[in-house]
Image 1 (tube, one colour):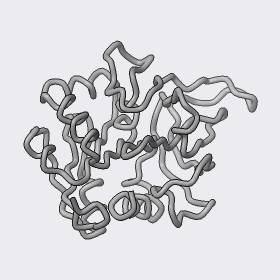
Image 2 (cartoon, rainbow, N blue to C red; image 1 turned 30 degrees about the vertical axis):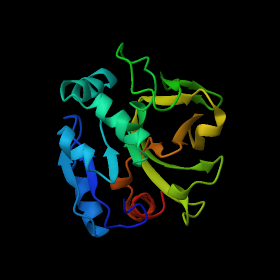
Image 3 (tube, helix red, strand yellow; image 1 turned 90 degrees about the vertical axis):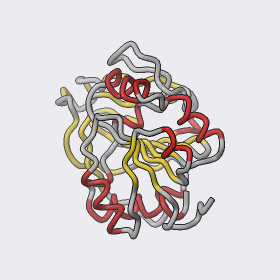
Image 4 (spheres, one colour; image 1 turned 180 degrees about the vertical axis):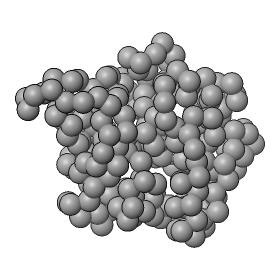
Length: 212
């Protein structure tokens, strides 16, 4: 498996909950022609997996379940294939969400909680829409070479609360701190949209292809 190469076979998992066009375009800029699929056979030959999504937690999980992808995805992770969850895709990595009743993938212990509207700086608007920086809690290959001033574009009303602190790579702030990057072994998630985050998002996806 060509884990250190941008020529690795990248499969974007199609749950029907995201417009994958921007992700495809950015990966193409990085020299990769990804496959977008909800087919188990495609996942079984992937060398990198990317799980995007927007919208409701239960809808995202239903998209995976209806395609028979839940167990296949877990098997590929168990086999060591790197998986990156993006936005809703990051939330699906966890055990469940306050937003719905469906169990999540359970690849990272913890739950997804609604962002609070009250903070120490006063009321904040939810959903959080806009640009925020990352405050690193630990080093990780996904963030290699990214300067402290790097900003990423967020659109979300919920955020993950990992059970274990050592799975938190970075936090960001929207009135209150929330977890913005997580990782556990070959599984990682980002709450923001790298494909909408210009050169910073491109650098992060390059790290995903080459270093993670």
